[in-house]
Length: 173
Image 1 (cartoon, rainbow, N blue to C red):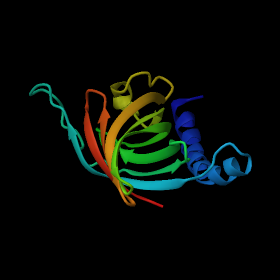
Image 2: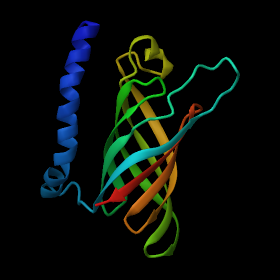
Image 3: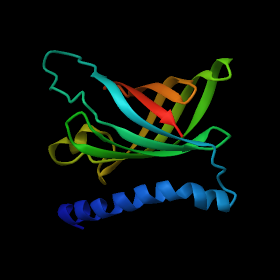
């Protein structure tokens, strides 16, 4: 498939995958695979890139992330996020993950870590090689976070490799 054909096919596939991720809880719960506990909608609040020297290129620190996660009672979850990457290109991250409780001083306050693994789609053109293993247009990613939940509000510090960090905030539903 040509680069243009691959790009058009992926543009059609992404909305279908997003719709599937939104419908998955009802299908999975009906089939006993996934018991829905809560969802999380989140956005990026602050991003910073690590600069290793004066010759580093300028990076986009406005990711405009919007993401949704669907959680089960056993702290497993699946999610998808749309954002602008470091080079101002729109990308998608489709992932699954697990939460790990660290400290819970009160019922409505918790500190926890999260680990996600999935695929990133959207590093194109001259920036395609800026992310490892992106030869097929989708690169694998493993992203750790540490964060806190207070009632329905959540905040996380997400580390994206050696490139930088992002603070996300969200609301449970």
